Length: 333
Ligand SMILES: Nc1ncnc2c1ncn2[C@@H]1O[C@H](COP(=O)(O)OP(=O)(O)O)[C@@H](O)[C@H]1O
Ligand SMILES: [Mg+2]
Image (cartoon, rainbow, N blue to C red; front, side, top):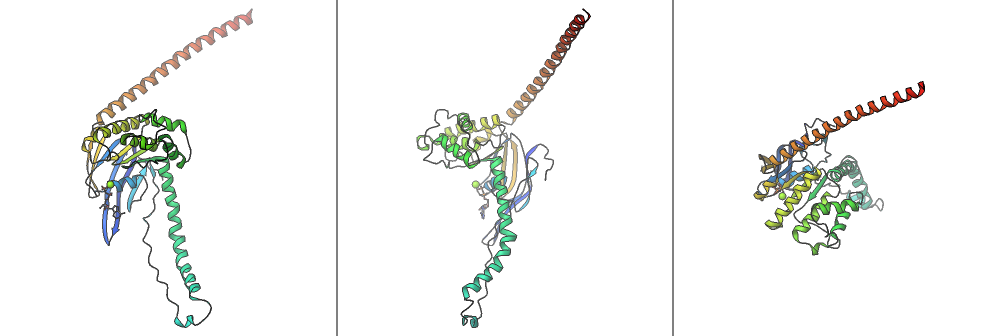
């Protein structure tokens, strides 16, 4: 279903995600209403256990809301109900008298009872859920890049091969694009190094390049600089916002590092599964200025194009008049 998204790329309405743990309900998300526009770089902050990772998991369709809706670019994002704990099925023990019979043996009887219980469960619940999970995976593949705190690079593959492997998993290798994204994160010339030959910051930049390799519309980071020193964190964040800006990628980045809000266009605070703060970040004004500059530049290009077209039209008209007059003169002669 398509709804009017009012310019928002992400739109969450009344999203709850509850877990039942040891008989207690944990409200990891407790009524989230959130809209994020294309191109925003959002920093998500809040104490441990406030629901930040759960929110990223919902936004990337790794997980589904218990209730509420999530639209991405106006489309309802596929979801699947949380896996139910399988109920213990108590299969009645055959009457002791049956044991005296040589056929059917107890095992066969148990198997028949099991099939009678499990086949409807499989058809009604397991099968539809797995097709919904596939749709969620497709959504993620098409739209989302994820960067984690631990870089998760494969040590036996070079930087370039790590990026290409991610492309292959997502359905197609494109070496030129892989080199382009490595170049964008400032690793030109280091493509053939193994992770052990790169610093922490460089490894995280490979991980960012890997998440960008399939041109996602949404980039998510969960404490992605948590393992880096402050100097390297700055470098990685600078690269990240530059690339997001260049490729028009929307980003949501979880961080507990308050100094990073200068890289954000918007800073959102969470507590106990709720959004408790929403303010412009350090780049808000810069983005707005750049957006305005871009709009002005586009408008100027439009005006110039129109002018060129109309001058071109006038010239073409004049030339064809001359030619027509000449050919009329020739005919008369
Ligand atoms: N699979 C799970 N089962 C039960 N409780 C969970 C599960 N995942 C997260 N939680 C709980 O949900 C709350 C939010 O967790 P999380 O989103 O990981 O917080 P944050 O990322 O902000 O630290 C916490 O109380 C956490 O214990
Ligand atoms: Mg977390």
